[in-house]
Length: 51
Image (cartoon, rainbow, N blue to C red; front, side, top):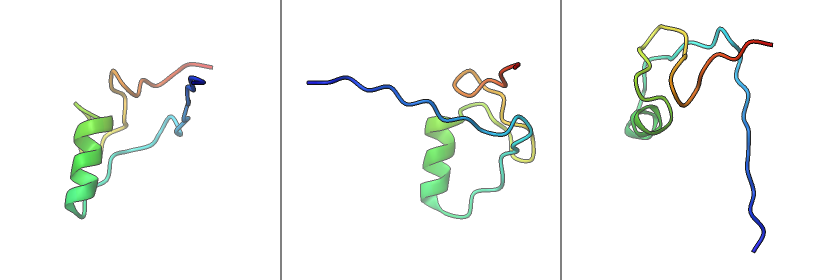
């Protein structure tokens, strides 16, 4: 079986918006743990990378 790795880039100024449903809450907890609503998403899983 072939292994695959995916990299997704987000704008360095992307801010977490208030979740509108349970699916968005689940995504927040899964993919952006530690991120705070209204603040730039800069977490262990989604660090702001310098270019």
